[in-house]
Image 1 (tube, rainbow, N blue to C red):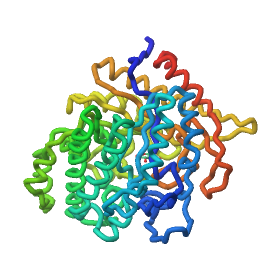
Image 2 (image 1 turned 90 degrees about the vertical axis):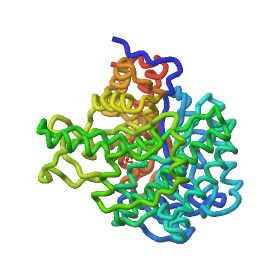
Image 3 (image 1 turned 45 degrees about the vertical axis):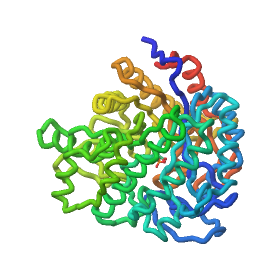
Image 4 (image 1 turned 135 degrees about the horizontal axis):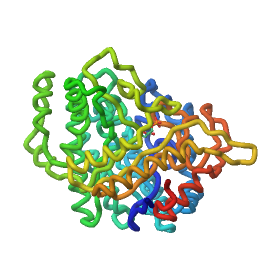
Length: 463
Ligand code: BG6
């Protein structure tokens, strides 16, 4: 059976400002939390002074200067859509200024204009794993209610500025990650109490809802979604305890979606807070604000996981505690590969929310070899993506409304978890290594031509 996708399907790729742009102080940009995490989101947080030049992300892949060439390559593959983020610190360097930084705004004007030249729709994340570091230092990050107002000002500024250029927005990248990486997600120290983390998350959920309202006020034509790390958990066994453990594990991250899609806290969280001794300060104004709900749901999906109530089965993972699934193979980084999980997750989210879904991250992080003739034969990546796209198509046949697919890292970039260049996701190879050596030249991989044919044939070449 051919796997034909609809003509308006948004094919593309996804990157994030802090993983591609570099130019970390250019044109008045302030230091972001990401600038302090030069060994990745689980590495140490190192204080720094502007100009000390010590990290891999300071240059990243120099997208800030090379974007015209990169957008042309995306266009060559036939992209209909490119997901990237705005670095909040380019617009409000310290986060609390009254007026935005014009040079920062102008950069994204140039970037969006470049995309428009090729008919590539921007899908823009307001906050992808970073915030102005000054808001952490001077206000205590999202733990402070005032940050809601600073974020709303930033959101309103960019919605207004780009209202004729951007029609699709996302609020916070993988908003559920704050439970595991509080500095990255909400600007709180690692080891912060659950009470503090959930209060900060509450502020962020209110800010997300206020951004939804602002987006609709400013441009009623625009659509705005949330963004979840789609960490779908299966029961490790058919023991009822494991089935229920999976249900609870899923509720842990679906809670974010429940608030953002339904507009209120789900009852199971009231019980969780009560039994965990967590008391949130939720005002009547907050409750009203939360009623502005998202137009669509976006998510990342790399792997599924297993849940059990048996602690002896749990391994300490990179990001989450992992319970390996004995039926699946893993990538070189230990991420278990599960294409059918994509179909399951799409059906699961569709049943729960009855909203359009957008897959905004999926891909294989792997080591690539640049051959002497400049080729890169990444069949493993082609296989991974083929199998996931086939399952997306199956889900659409099941009746799931899928807006589009932006693969993660269509061009090699700095990885989030460990700030590695060696973990490559791209269709385009970038000559740079973990020590920052390399020409930054771009090379088309075998997967480049494969993705190009998939898009050109609307999925017809999928196997
Ligand atoms: C998601 C993030 O968690 O996964 C991206 O939104 C990240 O920023 C991606 O890069 C892949 O993770 P990693 O650690 O392999 O870069």
